[in-house]
Image 1 (spheres, one colour):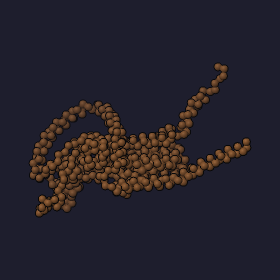
Image 2: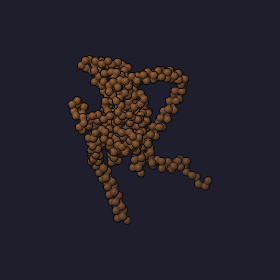
Image 3: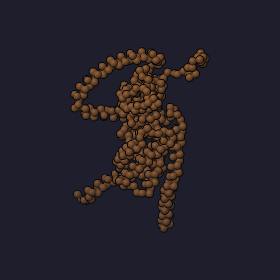
Image 4: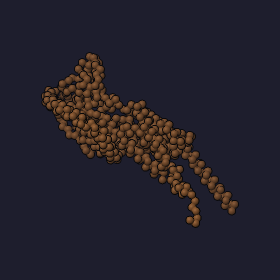
Length: 176
Length: 315
């Protein structure tokens, strides 16, 4: 079931994110999963996954609970809208999508913290740059991996792989 | 036959139209779902923001408690891997390092003898100032298992919590200096705000208690890894290399703990205080093991009770 796979991927991403330390923690794994779901053009799934991912990371952080949920939900929606208007199936096109998602998510997160009197203590531009680079690089490979494991086309490819092997061997000759 | 075929075709077209309408509905309803979820997150943020820093959020306590086994496992695995790689890298320089360490041990023993003499002098000076140790403190050793998961805050998570006797605002130290204070708790973990955080502060003195009048307070400077000491009179003598200690007046850290070493001084004047930058004594970017002091600051008398003519027998 696709929802079960999504939930499993999200759970793994959140647990890894809570366990990683710098510099690995600059990779925003839950955001990568959110971007993947949004690129599948599943609006409801993308919004829910974004909210859950953001709230889970907020709960383990000392920041405001809800700021991450807000930023990831809004990022998921913007990616979904872009995916419904532009064909983003190409792997190369996903690189700027990941970069934009990382920037939007970080900017909204820091904006709410500063607005509500809880400014983050890490320098904005430096942290944003590290997060952007790390998430884009790892996210490109991760999206390719998620695509090859979870999409319908991949499932069909695996299902018909054995039939293709048989076809390549050629027709059997009768009487032998 | 023709009737059946036409009915079947009509049924197929109706199903197709239903599917198209559902997709349209999804696209039309997505903004409504978005607004509902965003408002939910805003409400949660507003509730979280209104409360004071030291009050706990149950969801935070539960999440920290649930995630601590995974963080412990990850920390242990990464520690083992790091040690293995470190052993391989350091293999060649082991002999030279051994000689170096022997020399350091000799000088450390010499410093220890000097420190014991200074401690005796410190006890005399403390008596002169009228300071009393009203509470003793034990410590709980802990290991750092995670950093802040959002990467935007300067906090660490340790693998001891309220079940080990730790409470909020207890000081966290290493052998070389203070690390910070406990700001959040779960039964098995605690989050520590480091002394370099911009919201962190402590009462401080240059040199030893009673040996200097250079009192002030230290404040974190964020990601620079330094702390700043403020309100030190420009008439006091402060030099690079001086050690900064806690005074105990902040109600969090007991007196006499090392904060760090002065690395830069912009001298002040009679009307302007010094600008002092301090490198923390504890290596905050390489923390592995820390200790939480089970220290409670002594209760201070109510201000009116300290006035000279107040009848102190009345409550």
